[in-house]
Image (tube, rainbow, N blue to C red; front, side, top):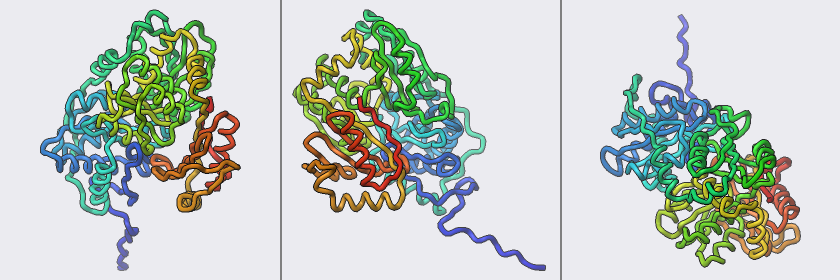
Length: 500
């Protein structure tokens, strides 16, 4: 009888905890959590490992930690949240499930209000439908800093190479879900002034993009007294066939609906887990992130709600900075990733934080980005003005100078990474005829000019390289983005910018 040789295991592969196969790919937390393609990098087994690693880190901080667990509208969100909960409980962590689908800002508020030690949200935010992931919030209600995620990654790596976590329960205990929404809405109502909204009878069209913001932002706007119409409110794991990202190509219907309306009106949109936002003015034009942030900051400063300063990502346009300085507010420029801005809020160095990709936070409500709060404050501003937002924006630009900002995504490969590394080592002295005045390597490579900047960096959440740019007008912006793309050697580029 011929003996069959045992199957050879591929180098680097290991059996996953619970008896399932696991990919040797490390679990890595990027600028805003761990993300990957569902059923490839993100599986039920690997979700258990990630949650177990979080639990082990929490137990290093103290006994019997308590963790909130939630999920958004993505495919298998509830099942993966259950797997994470089981893994946490298996290593001695108390789990409090939050009634879901739930926006990340609501979970972030619940962490602080309930004095939990952390929160896990199963979400891939604005990424394409095939992605899933996990966000880790600390007890401050903000994304975990790199010092924490590095430790979690090391603990996860141990499990991936053969040091398994404790066995998880096949039949999970019944847990009573907590409704975190009422407390959040009450806190939001103490921040935003409903009086102007009711008096102006503002009409708001809200595009939820099939995400977790549906049933939350529209309710909040209704409480303020706005007349609300909602688009794409039904939970759809496919997000209507595109990424739940409020970029121009996804907001055509929102723009048409706003343009066709009457009276004081605007449009708002949020991404998959409602931590990012976008604004459409009364004429149906989409504001850029820089324009929306500049309007918000000016409004908050005029109404006395910001005093300590503003934290901005390094890729945010300069109009926001100039508005802040005009109000006598100090400005902090920090690396991309809202966790850096959140730290400035937690430390009391800033009251407001904003970034180039639609993130905004106000310390009076929370430390993490909150698209729901931002949309409500923009509605309050529109009600006070009783005229299109662009009229106030025009006043700001006449006073502080025009700024057009945008970004593009280039598919990342070894050649792209090599070009970026080379440019960082030896940056050019001139770009497209403009002299490089400043070179910054705080996060990737940022080349400063007299009239804007060009920035190149590897994405921390997607397999792409990012190109960010600022210029005085739309045509110059498009050209600068094209130059950035060529520097990275790309033949095709996914441009996703709002030139205003």
